[in-house]
Every structure is written in C-alpha cells, then in structure tokens.
Image 1 (cartoon, one colour):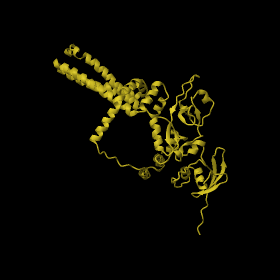
Image 2 (cartoon, helix red, strand yellow):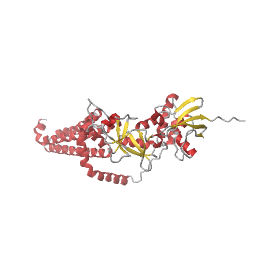
Image 3 (tube, helix red, strand yellow):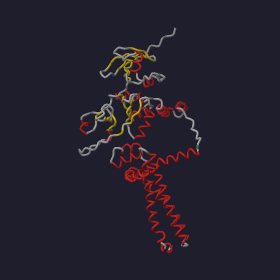
Amino acid sequence: MTEFIESAELWYSGLIAMIILILASGFFSGSETSFFYLSHDEIRTLRVGKPRERLVAVLLSNPDRLLTAILFWNLVINLLYFAVSIVITQRLTSKELNVAAGVFGILSLFGLILFGEVLPKSIAVFARRKVATTASWPLAAAVRVLDPIIPALSWVTRLVRRTLWPTVEREPVLHPEDLERAVDAFQLSEEIVKIEQQVLHNILDLSEIKVEEIMRPRGTYETLTGPLELDKLKSITPEGDFILVQNEKEKGEANAVFSLQNFTNLNGKERELTLDELVYVPWCADLATALQMLQQRYTAVAAVVNEYGETIGVVTQEDLLDTILMPQPSRTRRLLRRDPILEIGPGKYHVEGLTTLRHFCARFDIEFQNSQDGQLTITGMLSEQLDRLPKLGDHVSWQGFDFKVVHVSKVGQYRLLVSRQPIPSEF
C-alpha cells in the first residue's frame, strides 16, 4: 500500500480524469432515466413552464434523436474511462505493482457501475422532473453537437440490419375482430368482467370509429384571434377548458390552442400565456390514429379538417377517454351536459338530432352497421331519406322506429320525437 501511495505520480492525473469521466457518465445515465421516466401529463405540464422546462418537452418531441445522442456520448465516455484505466494499470504493472494494478482495475469497474449507472439512475427516478430540467441545457448542447452525424449513424444502422437480416418476416397481424371474440370468450365473475369487457370493446372500437363521429362541431367551442391577452380571457365565458387561437394575419383557421388548465394568475400579476401546438387530423382518420398523434405531440386538442383542409371541428383527449371508459359514450351528452335520449312516455323519446346512430343503436340494442354513404347522426339519416334538410313536422321510419321532427333551433339543431313502431300481429 505504501508503494502504491508513493507511486502517485503514475496514477494521480489519470485518476482525476477518470473522476471527471465518471461524473460525465453519471450525467448522461441520469439524464436518460429522468427524461424517459417522465409521464405524459408531466411532459404536457413542462411544455408551458419555464424555458428549461419547455426545453425538456422540445427534446422529448424527437425521442429517437435524444436517445441516440445520450447513448453515443455515454459510450464514448465509457471507452475513454476504460482507456485511462488500462493506461494506469499498465504503468503500475511496469513498476511491478501487480497487486495494486489488479485492485485498481476492479475498483475502476465497480466505481463506474456504482457512480456512473446505479446511483445516478436511482436519483433520477425519484427526482426525475428536477433532474430533467437541470440537465436540459447541457444535454441540448450535446444533442446539437451530434446532429451532423446522426444521419450517418442511422444509415449505418439500416445497412447493418439489411445486411445481417435481409429477409425479416413481419409477424402476422391480429385483427380487432379476433380480439373482440377473445374478449367475449373470456369468463370470470360476471359483474366485474362485464365492465372490463365493455372497456376492452371500446378500446378495440378505436380502430373502427372515425374522428368525425365524436368530434365537437365548429361553433361548439371558443375561437379567438391572436395575440392572446388576459383581457380577452376576462371578456368571454368558454364552453370548455380550451380556446383555439387563430393568426391575426390569417383569419379563419386556428393554428394554436390555449388550455385553461395551464393558466395561472399569481398575486394579480399577469403571466405569459403559452400556447400549445394544434394538431390536425383528417375527418376520415380513426380514433386510434388521433389518440396516437395527441400522445406523440404531448397536446390535448386536435383540429379535424375536411378534404378541402377546412377545420370542421375538434377532438380532445377527454373525448377519446370518454369513448373508452363510458359504457355508452355520447358526443351529444358531452356537448349538452345531459342525456341526448330522454324517455317522455311509454315507448316515446325525445332525441337530439346530433345523436350518433352508433349511440342510438347501442341504447336500444340494435345491431349497428356503418353506412356506406357515411351518415353518422340521426340528422344525417333524416337528410338521406328526405333528400333535403329536415323541416319541422317531417316524419321518417328507420330500424323499427318512427322519427318526427318536433323542434328546429335557429342554429340548425334538431329535436325529434321517436316512438317504436307497433309489432304487426300474426294471423
């Protein structure tokens, strides 16, 4: 031991370099854990926070780029660490300090594992948000430095994959219908499984239901012209918990969304109103695609556009969760804050025209089949059968029910009296 201490000139400078490298390795290891351990809600909150917090959300918007940079720098640092360790070991063995060289090599390995991996990752798990915001600026610089060579790394990865596994066969696709049959065949206690089966069926229906069917139509939400200021918010009473914001120079189409959950007013002082990015989805997209886009962009509102690129409504994360968790999800219930189908007498109901045919069929145990012409609501079904817009007093029959228009509002909302058709008696 005395000889090892006396030979400090052989390993002292290298030990300092190894300590610096092990701290750098711990930084990247902890950063990786803290960033990718953040929940979806935490990332959404960071998007409207302080500059450091917003930078965390920006880095996570491209997770492949971030992870590639972290792994690359961590690999380089670890290689340098072991290179320095080998040099010091060789110096010690050249002075015939073989025992000291062996102990130094073992301690170097355990030191990197403990202080470069285990300890930083453990701290990052318990304080992920604080660690992520603290590491955001240096990590952003490390990612930016690596940007010029990331395309080359991706090209090498594809080349190796195609060279070593040129004929990778895709796994067979499991269709939603197969999953639904499996859910129906799953048997446990009846009351518990009934709820679970309904939720699973709703999840599987996400790949079948189109965004147009559950979206909030244009006119049912607030739209303001930017720039958004506190005085404008005080002068309105929003219907929901979000406001669409359109560009002052390009009026007509919104390009951002302001969530009221992100707004705070502390001690009467105005805080900067941060807008979220508005995601666009086509009217014909399914709900699974819309949910995936919202999760990838860490936002809660998507604008629904038609084939001409015009915004015809919005769909929110709340709407999608309602579709998944509610036994009989209904867009009209969310908009009107009441049941869209009200029983007013034996076999007679008041039904809102905005009610979807899917919800109507589920309410009365009718098998629902998607219409080839794309009619989704009761009003649409009436228009199809009448070949015109419905008027007060119009009467049609559909699926064993009589539909009569009893009210038409100024904004074109319909209310219908629905009654079951009498079952013909058998002679």
